[in-house]
Length: 391
Ligand SMILES: C[S@@+](CC[C@H](N)C(=O)[O-])C[C@H]1O[C@@H](n2cnc3c(N)ncnc32)[C@H](O)[C@@H]1O
Image (tube, rainbow, N blue to C red; front, side, top):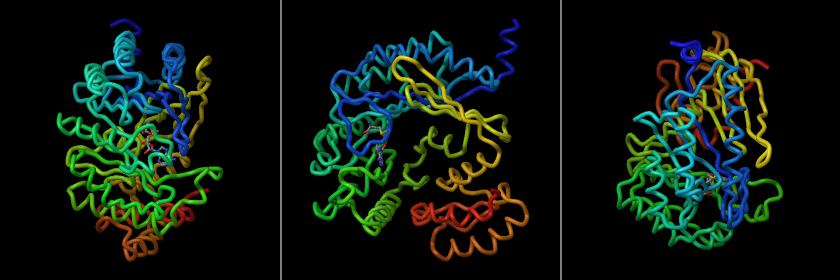
């Protein structure tokens, strides 16, 4: 083996890659993700940006002792990556081939798409040929009044057509639905009714997001109150669990064997590489992390730049506790806390959380996992934990 080969062997191999595709046809008025909207996305600029990013990314990985290994997770997020269409699928096939990136035979490769896009069969087929085996569909609501209010580019009919397409072919897909929408009371939003319509297609995975808005959001004065949102969230969780879905993370529900591997990597605080205009990656220093580097891309389209942030052990711990509590991974208090902290946690906090119905089940082996009410109250549970943690 030559010197280069030996060097590669010693490097830690990254199994997950997130690719951010920033373009959308139209701007949703609540969206706070970096994106560019318009009828003719500039794919030339996007592709040039990826080409120019690659050597900078390689340099960063090498400096930190990492190399991209066989990928177990690939997530094409947006924006609306499906818009990149057949051109994108071809581009990426060559892009990864030329750079020696290989998708594992067991890869979970997800593509986000919006209902109502052009020529769904051709787009799906092209991405399948590339290796996508999971589609995430931004349905948001099945009522046209709400879709219009949110500035969405599709109708409820478009969503039904897309859902039927994926269900009929037995494809692996996920549906995004939003709660807490403006004018919910005025327009009598019946979330159970919308959810039941979606359940007729039996999607393998459903993501439920409570609308978050900035202070200057145009519909801020007409959002439902906390009690409305609480009822929607708990009802959705109850209905989905009764229909055989597992509520495995604050916003995510899956049928058996359909939890998103990509999501679980995030919540378990694993190393994830990232490419694309505002994508963010995390490189952990070692298996039992002594620190990490978080990086974020910017400078789109002309000048790809990496902003680096070094995370120390306490910052990582705080994030890990938050991420673990968000999901069925749960908080391992035996691992996270010293003896004194464990005593306070077990004597004061656990009984309180349990009494209030926040836990999914009895704690086991120093691990506590939240149920739907606990997920809803996550911020206040974290406040309970702050006094226990180092400054
Ligand atoms: C970044 S978007 C991209 C997917 C796709 N283009 C779409 O919106 O349909 C991914 C998901 O995030 C959720 N999302 C985006 N902005 C949100 C917000 N302000 N509050 C809650 N959920 C949001 C939506 O449910 C959306 O499907």
